[in-house]
Image (tube, rainbow, N blue to C red; front, side):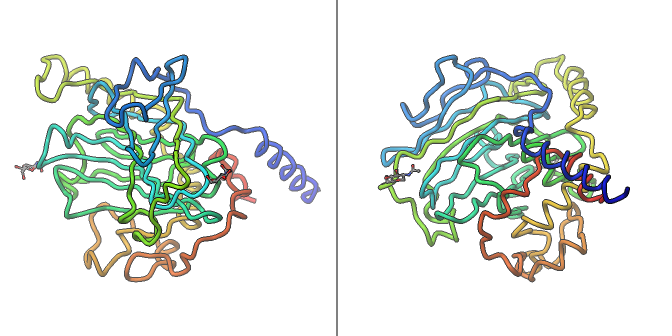
Length: 339
Ligand SMILES: *[C@@H]1O[C@H](CO)[C@@H](O)[C@H](O)[C@H]1NC(C)=O
Ligand SMILES: *[C@@H]1O[C@H](CO)[C@@H](O)[C@H](O)[C@H]1NC(C)=O
């Protein structure tokens, strides 16, 4: 009986894996034209015919990028992104929030950066957090993507509230940064814009610059759709008198939304992702930071995989066989863990 129940669960389980598309948070999408503006790269930014989405191209003339029209004080930022295929070493596709244009010396930033790939290997990406110009205290984490991100779009999200930051890949939270007094100004707290860019990062992106962009394979095209900009819109220079009240309300809304709730299931899914796919963490890099930062949550099951340089001990790229096991739904992944 037990066996049958388990077998049935497994069957249901694998069916669900087939029909479930990439995560789609229950949030209103904004059209490209309503939410965003051209940042750089001329014709290398191409809007879709319905003006809802856009593609960014890197070729030997230029990269390209777009920026949200408004700045936000806390928010939920999300996009379905399809990364360029074929040989993409050296290419950086970045999806991030920043206010570096407004606060040159004290800027805040939250990053998701895709770091190209060498054919046949998993794509890598990293997340990072800066607050109030903490550029000498990088908080990088790097991971392998468990799927091929060039075949179909996947949803990537950054949640930023007054209390915590969560990075998502589909609906799996992969990193949470909880604000604490000890973190001080290093926690981003000033209004930020959302950016998406593609550029030539030959100097460092892939295997520390060992593999460079090869323009024989251009153009490199990255698609952005299902764009989400949710948060309190503010002008950081001309503070509107009603903005404190408006933004407090918006922050309450964000904080109580489902993407902000860390259920035990989501925590378990996050832990599993990190145990399987994280390849570097500043928290375990004791050479660089002998004393771990206050926001570091030292997890023994993670830490045992890392050397004193913060890199996973067996961080040779895995082949894509892992891809099949990617389960975008947190609750389903959790059930797998319970069995
Ligand atoms: C941010 O940095 C500036 C300049 O270093 C400093 O005066 C200010 O107190 C800092 N703010 C926070 C919240 O730490
Ligand atoms: C990869 O690039 C090469 C050279 O440009 C091209 O011949 C080939 O069709 C590309 N493959 C794919 C899957 O796009």
